[in-house]
Amino acid sequence: MENNRKILIIGKKQENLDRLTDFLSSHSLKTYHATSVSETADQLISANNFGITVITDNSFDTHVLNTLQNLKTFNPKMGIILLMKFNNTESAISLVNQNIVDHITDPDNLPGLYSAIKNEFKKMELNEENILFSKKYKRLRQEQQKNLRKTLDLEEIYDATLENLMTALDLRDVETFGHSRTVAKYSQVLSQLLGYKDKTFLDSIRKGSLLHDVGKIAIPDSILKKPGPLSEKEWEKIRLHPSLGFGLIKEIKLLKKVGNVILYHHERFDGQGYPKKLRGEKIPIEARIFALADTLDAITSHRPYRKQRSFEVARKEIQDNSGSQFDPRVVEAFSSLELRKWEKIRYETTKMLQVMEDFYPN
Image 1 (cartoon, rainbow, N blue to C red):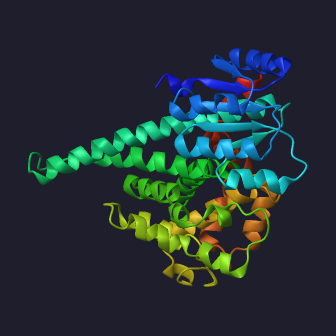
Image 2 (tube, rainbow, N blue to C red):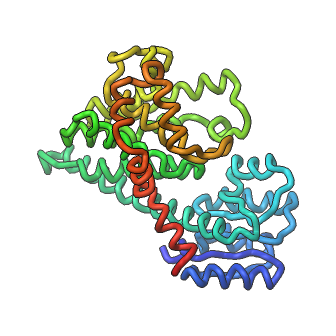
Image 3 (cartoon, rainbow, N blue to C red):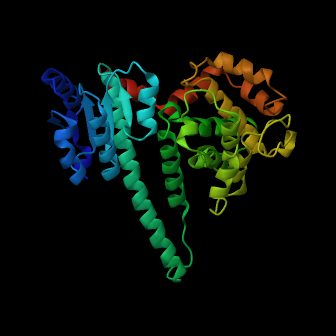
């Protein structure tokens, strides 16, 4: 467990090592040094001595590339962060898509390095927690099968598993990190504006929102993280994710409304959505609510292919699509709440204040 928190910095220039060490030490992170990837390869492969390896000012030739591939093969849980400027963006993206490195950031971007390290530590924690939850769930099932315990409340385990699964899905793409949690909150607020106060309904729409994209587990990274436009065949695979997600969770003892969000969240009010091309009120209300919440977050969030837009722009686009993409009743409920309150919901849900305080302490 302790080794997972150790950071190895590989670099030849002492001034770079000193700069990185001083920065990370100031944030209570323990570091060790090495001069080259090749010199430390055997140590890194043979034992899990380090949780994260940071590589800087190294020549990136074929030998180094092969060594990194071996590291990932023998020690897949170790996070590899590359501090390097790339003239060819596609080359950098290829390293990530091939799972050779986990993060790439500019050598001068110390906040970016800190963010990548925190991201890796969070993934380690999630992995450890999921292992514990899996063992606990298996043990409970075995006890149930042996009739040692006739009744058992699994709600806490379900909730923890859903939260961890949702976070793991978000971490698969750092560009959309926090999306599921944000749309879950938006959906609950929209539901309350529409008059839904029942705790079971609100909890179901929260769970459905957290898991709405679970089907993307079955979609290859080559499609999900493709930097350019998708082909029609690739879009066909993307459009499968609601059905795939519903298939993954239908055996879990969750309420029908959770599955409705997962299966129907890309349906449109005018019947032009997918996968069933449902129209109007034939689309379950929880899916109609989520569809608007999903669009609100998408418009106001940064994406690799465009900058984030304002809540004013989001409101206009949503209102312009009332009756076509969205249920007019849901649009009316959304419009009844001041934009500053929607902004506050997003701010509080993503907790960006704490991140800024980490980088800019008083």
